[in-house]
Image (cartoon, rainbow over all chains, first blue to last red):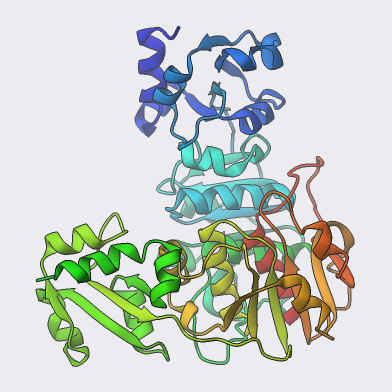
Length: 240
Length: 240
């Protein structure tokens, strides 16, 4: 059975301020929790329903009822297990390799997809502006499918970060050079902007290479691509 | 004020069987409805709140209250206007150009993103297996941002369709030829599979060119890319 304090802790971690205060976050479901148990993340506490106990007994989970799981869960169909993990301490490293930088990405689904893409394409660090959605938000955690444990993610003053870097800075904009005919460096920072407003003017000034994914539509529509699909296409271009 | 029948019709159209029966679907919000009003789609009925009437008065919308809008809407923040449009009659055409074929894509968000990508990359037709999620589902309609009106979409027996085509058939699989080093024909069919199971074995037999997006991860993870991001990357490869 769940104690009052445990219940309070888990539900409080739905809010960013408590995640920051406790330096903890919650993951749910067999697949995601397993990926995290097998990663470098540190486990704080584990809860599971009785029929799943054997599968993860070495982590000494606390058994909870289906009803308790349902109350704790953020998922529409809760899935056996909930884990509380420590937020890893990631420091900003000297920029090397391919780095993705996000300027105020708001949608948790988009951030989750981008983290998974960074994992696929071997991105060395994901640098987020301070007002980008929190990567330990439960929707992000579930969308990353474990990639969250493998990509170093930092939140920082993006302007300062870019100013102090000496890698070429590429930015996805609407009127840049055709990405298909641009030379894309192996070591670079790729900046992607907000869902509605793109890259802010302050950050755009720091971009050394503005690039655009060419459009092949017969009409002049659609206006833009979703930020996660645009990131997918550009990371693939960098790695070709 | 909304009549009982109008209310009943709009809420019934949340279900696929009624959309098929009436050959109608619902779109919401200023941006999406405007895109559809300016497209080839035929308007059946339009409803809006009073302060938006002037902007679309030429379409003779019926004025409804904010409260009525809230009741009808599928959105968390309803946005001024709801339109009922006729489902266009699209017939299967002889395959030419670049065609995307979906084998049981289930997630409305993924289908919406893929429709938008088809629009961006000038895909000539989107061919869906009969058990792919309905493109007139409200979540798909809202996710396509108007692209739904510009891409001819058909639902058909995918096996028969592929058998009768004489274009090369590419399929995204886990163990295919590296997409970066494959010659991708200008005229082709690209088959994308289900979110969990990929392309079904029955359809895989009909694929002439199995292709894979190479992975640059240092570990052997993640297992796969989301179907919408994979479609983005491959359509970009076809159009390079």
